Length: 538
Image (cartoon, rainbow, N blue to C red; front, side, top):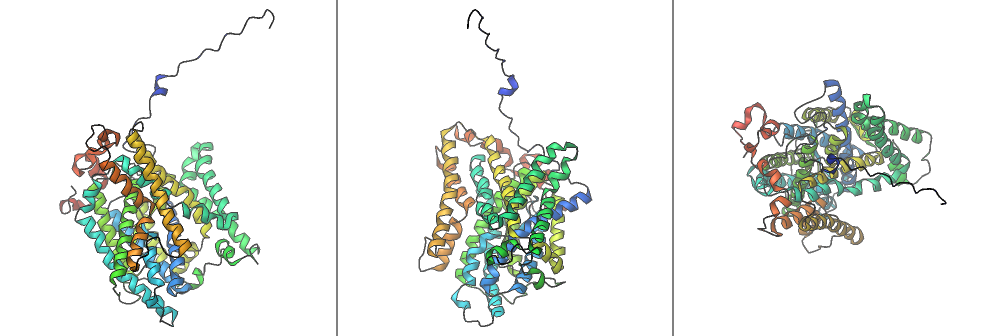
């Protein structure tokens, strides 16, 4: 206004050239403190191994809590079943890290087997047993027979190289929705379960995030203490808080469901557990065989090997290893079949799969050490034999465990999204395959599960119960649906076009499709004791 001169416009500084460059592609994830072949000092490795043991307990307790009452068992049978699952998980984890994929993965009981297991448990063929314990044993024997046959399917697919042939045609583009939904597809086990006792679940979630993500940046000199031990610190604090609420009578007079979810003394595991017990094969009696049960379990074993492959790929990323060669994935699936065989022999009611939550813990701690996972397997064996001590840890309220899942499953989903760096995101073909496979991977399982809850049976309801179960198992798995859609589209859409190879990112992974093409594959995935001479990878 008046005679004042207008202020000159602010000078615009040109951005630095480096700021305009895209982030460089990284075959191996940087920022990992201990990679696959390295290990922290023994005291820290022991604490980290115990933390992995604590995380894997949740799925085992959930499966036993669902199945045992349907089978006719009580707290005593539930405790025995959990101890058996833990014992077998220790054996299976060791054999996978030694002779299987060699990745830092925990092999534990899988919820992919729940549908055929529940079908066996509620079958009319078991309703004529008056004694509940006898009904439990007969149900378990049928599950054992079905698992023993299903294990052969995984061993054939893995050891004869069929899975190697299939995974050789995987590209980063088809891996993104597959691995992403390996974590994201388990969203129902996160906040919905946390909200069943929000007064302990939500504090656990907040505390875990604060300890693992914020405090390390405020105390950079002691960062490792907090982000590596965040699960132990947060669970100990909130578990003590839940015990105080229980002792103070905060849940007296509340509904049964609230007391089961919130109280620290309602699991029944401690009272039902024995002081010392070593599980042994066929402890429930000899297996019985039924063709329908076996085919349904085989479908579950296929879903389990698909979900385990997604977990293998995520674990290799957080272990700062190179992409897993197809021959190593096939070898890991073959040993997963041996794990399912052991499950059937010991009687765990369900087969095994690679633990998604433990793969997420690799990302949270930034430690992808194989030795840490082997130590966790030692804890599984130790606490499975000392039943009372293991039961104390297994009695942690499940909303606390669900809060952990909210973070750990997210890390696995993020591992899947990280493979987008190899793809051309400006390609409309890439956009369609990514968007459609992610959408269908979430939408189809949601439809099958909602239909089952509303009608009491799945949308496929023929006269064959086993066929119905097969369809329900396959299409209730988000990563399985995502892999089928993404793999099919990636192999057929614009087939023969010159840009497809680079748009899908295949050129980045080409040299890792053959084991011997990159010397780092030998470093990360070769068998111990020079066993590669007798069991070569191709």
